[in-house]
Every structure is written in structure tokens, then in C-alpha cells.
Image (cartoon, rainbow, N blue to C red; front, side):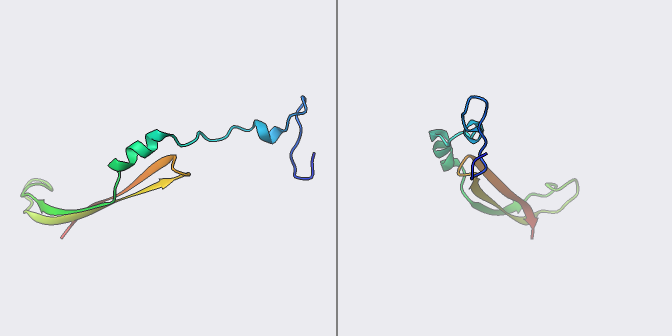
Amino acid sequence: MTARGDEQGPTGARVAAAVPQPVGVGPEMAALARFYTDVTWHGTIHEGGMGPGTAAMAGVGRGKVQAIQDGRWIVLDWALPRIL
């Protein structure tokens, strides 16, 4: 064992170097980014839109987007429409 805590395997290679690393971020993520933007919306929910017999009503919603793990994943946080 070394001072840093790295062990050597049977062939003398450092065990820490053998641990798999995450896949790097490729150009595909940059190409997809244009589809994922923060949004807000508002509009009218038509009569019957929330079930039979419901009246027309106004609603608003939002969506936020965040890249995580150094851009490997895109997380979408969507709020359901809120009835006004």
C-alpha cells in the first residue's frame, strides 16, 4: 500500500487506475441541448378538460432544465398545470 492508499495489483499496476471511469460527454449532448430550455405557459383548460362536467378554467405551468454529472444527463423538472 502506498502513502496515498493506492494498492498494487498482482502485475504491479495500480488498482486505482483499473477502476472504470464514466463515459465522457460527447457532441450528442450539445446537439440535444437546443431542445431543452426553461419554459412557462398559460392558457385555458376547456370545459370538460379536467373531467366530465368541469367548467373552463385558466391554468399555468412551468418546466426547468438542468444538466447534471458534468453534462452527462439532462434533468427535466416539470410542474403540472396549476388551476387559477
